[in-house]
Image 1: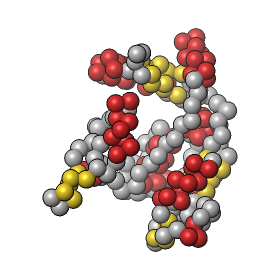
Image 2 (image 1 turned 60 degrees about the vertical axis):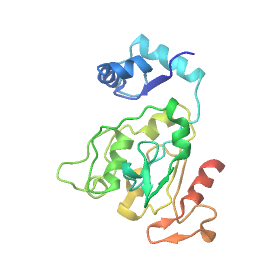
Image 3 (image 1 turned 135 degrees about the horizontal axis):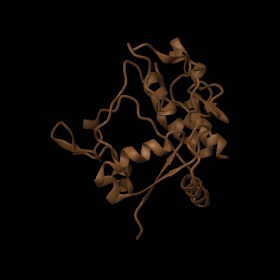
Length: 212
């Protein structure tokens, strides 16, 4: 069988490729190809050829962000014990691990998840000093991942089992290329779901994703 393919998508595709290629283990395990998808990316023939190949095999893309999930509670990374009993807390992720690229050493941002969401969405560092991006500059210009997929012809959606009002998330996500945005106050089935002070149970969000 051929090696699994990793496509780098976006403005920094060429720079991302050069960074990963330094890690020989990744280069041996994966066929790493950058593709041209950003407004400021360098338009080389290789990037466009990879983009054409990617379009032929385009699949659904799901970016699932876990809130407050320490690595010692994620069993596909390492054994998890509750008391004396060993628990498999992430059976589906464990099942897919042989086809998964796992990065165990990385930087994280603080002090809120909104800053992490900003970094994930825009591939940028948050402002120094720990300020919240939605309070400083919620419409900061960046060619976000949702806009990249929107430009590539994808239908895009954002589902959040919490509330967009917390840390003013909507101020950041508006006008970022999403066709649909739903949170704990708008998702179907929320009336019958278990309620928490920070939102509703995750199964409601999962159903909304599947329905989309």
